[in-house]
Amino acid sequence: MSFLDASGMTGGYGAADILHGCTLKVEKGQIAVIVGPNGAGKSTAMKAVFGMLRLRGGHVKLDGEDITALSPQERVAKGMGFVPQTHNVFPSMSVEENLEIGAFLRRDDFRPTIDMVYDLFPILRQKRRQPAGELSGGQRQQVAVGRALMTQPKLLMLDEPTAGVSPIVMDELFDRIIEVARTGISILMVEQNARQALEIADMGYVLVQGANRYTDTGAALMADPDVRRTFLGG
Amino acid sequence: MDILNALVALLNFVIIPASSYGAQLALGALGVTLIYGILRFSNFAHGDTMAFGTGVTILGTWGLQAMGVSIAPLPTALLALPFGIAVTALLVLGTDRAVYRFYRKKKSDPVILVMVSVGVMFIMNGITRFVIGVDEIQFDDGERFLISAKAFKEATGLAEGLSLRSTQVITVVTAVLVVWALFWFLNSTRTGKSMRAFSDNEDLALLSGINPERVVAVTWIIAAGLATIAGTLYGLDKSFKAFNYFQLLLPIFAAAIVGGLGNPLGAIAGGFIIAFSEVSVTYAFKKVAGYLGPEGWQPDSMLQLLGTEYKFAVSFAILIIVLLFKPTGLFKGKSV
Image 1: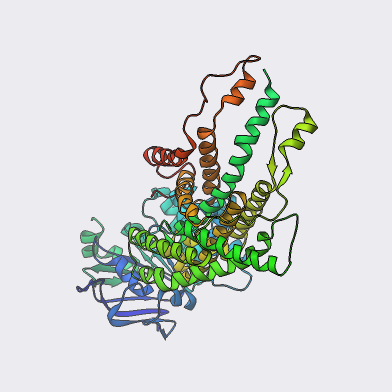
Image 2 (image 1 turned 90 degrees about the horizontal axis):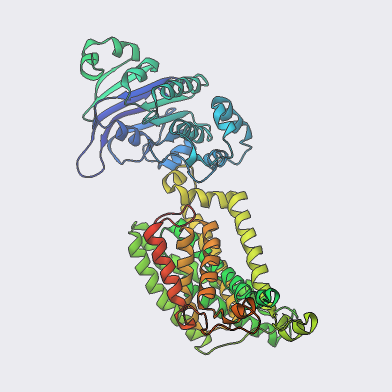
């Protein structure tokens, strides 16, 4: 039984379905990556897992519990953390306040979690009094991931965390994501940079037109000549 | 050359009145800017919320006076303020429940909410006139002057008198206290931070588990408090007349926009910018120039840029200049 089991998801925003029986599974402490061409429904699939999309078919189970009917907020309380692709920080608030708001639902002492985030992203400790909107793109992504970690999620979902950052920053972000996974948090990630993302992925899902085309371990997908030719540019 | 008398005249006719007027505008603009930041529309009913709050405070004042309660030398109205704020908060919360929430749930465009607030404005205006009447009401029963012009002349021997009314001092002191409390609330409390987060990024705030209805309710209560305090201070300083508060709407909006809508610090700066511009553009500088010029010389003209009847033109002009050249305001705000 996978930790996250989203099976047969069918649905869309309006009358037409975008997802057609899409299935995503993530094991505990592993990294799953969704790749695919533009318009394949990658972000939509992730939004469906997070409850931002009404499903017409399929179910979403977290740790064995069926959460298909829950709202995104309720899923956060159940242990999901979501980092949107854009507008994922509170720009006029300081880095530390961003983290505090991330812990809004928590009533216990969240100081240790803030320290943990600072240990993971040391640059944030330096910039903790600075408004998040004044940080560089890569640093802002770190704030966004840190904010999502504040609820101590068991599943962290990242929608294109490396969009718009330089290759060096991208490598660093991937390193950090691996570190997060090592602490036992499962990670589900949508990525444009398919090659680099599959390199760190335990599991890779190639989506085409809202359905699973290839599903295998990251390494196997990288080795598959069909996948290489069609989606990884040779 | 008589710098001392010139300075006293300037202080007496420009700086002191503009400071207290600026403080009143700043408090009003803070309410407008908070509503804009959280509910994302320009609340045209804010002026009449001020009028209603002041009206209720006046009723409370009369009640206290009838019971013989007095906090002399301070005006009794200060004691009635909490009552006025509470009733006004109930009214705006009721309005939100009955009117604004419907459009919020429908996710209506801001411009629709603005039009809705115009409707609310007319109704509130009617309620206020119905409750307290349309006449001019003086309700300042405290000590009138801290420094009277006559006493100042006798004490200093200067030809120019300086009068400092107690309401002017009360206005500025109250405004400072209220602003300090508001900023402390927004920056240091959990609820205050959740309001700032909601204003910054609504979707992310929802994801973080912030309850939007609670944020909205707290915002209305604070806005009602700010409106009632600003309106009462204005009424103490000048006098109460329901229609005057409707006219205050323009300088208040100008202040909020000049400072940058949604930015509390900008609202305060904007309030003083508008007040000082308005007072100094409509003040006749003849006397000040006379003191500064050579002995016995007086300028031929009044040295008054605009008649006081045109004071609203000043707000309008500043508003248009800012919208043309810096639509987000002097401080970092949202564009209109």
